[in-house]
Length: 390
Image 1 (cartoon, rainbow, N blue to C red):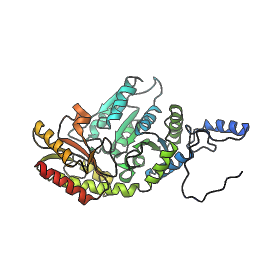
Image 2: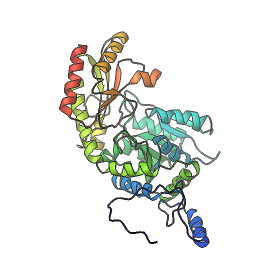
Image 3: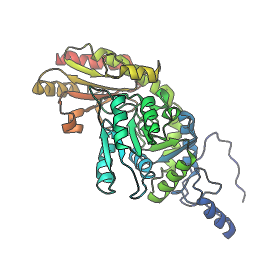
Image 4: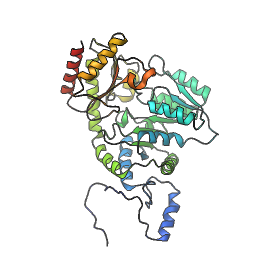
């Protein structure tokens, strides 16, 4: 019986594990075409390969990032694995260069998987005085001659904003591929593909979905050969996002720019209050002139905002810092919860020392993720907590 066409504006949730191919000839044609590894196939075969609901979500992200393709995966880490793995070519490979101030999971992946298990030659480039020096970077690239450079637009948790345009220009000058993790900046603030990046990654768990109830990752790019490599890798290692999560992500993407713009403005207001508080010794936020990379952030982001993340440190010696941190967390706990993620609808926090340990040992440091709830109420909660500590 012929199915009736439904007048819905939305792509339905296709939960099919396998799709009907009707005849042996159609099946043969579908599997032959599968070797092309197109993002959207003419004939769907199996949901681990491709799924129409996932393809629809990818198209929404392509619009946001201004990319020719997007490939969704089930987590941010699976997107990182896919992006890095498709450039691995057995033993015939030059070193890879990672900027040191990036997501801890990426650093651990580079060390535990790429170096220890796959035998890659991994190098690290570190900042000086809270910012990356392009002259030193060019010296490093000239000496190492990396096949691949990996960087974040806004680092975690110190919120360093590199000169992305300069980094990509230097890397390309030395024939290096560039992968940019754009999770913290999002395409609202910056589109690294416009500067020549080969792949842009997002943990879509964070701002793209923005509601703390989906885990997803995505790779975006313009080179169709890279896309085919990513589609093939995702298929064989099973990194495909579920149709249900893709459907929910598509609906949440509709409000992305509204949500993130509000989070940027809230973070700016919060940072302004925090940096005027006597019990806080330092605030890291790219929108503040005191941040080492404020000029880079202003040049790259313009007047759109500086992201939704703030890191700050309480004043005092270590016991005092720890006591103030714990008192603050307790005082705001009804409104601001301790949750190990970011980009949620409500403001959440994370104690830096508890998560990063020896890398950032100061016990008074807190990373704050601004939500898009009522900013006046949020500021009142924080001010009451700071007054109580003082």
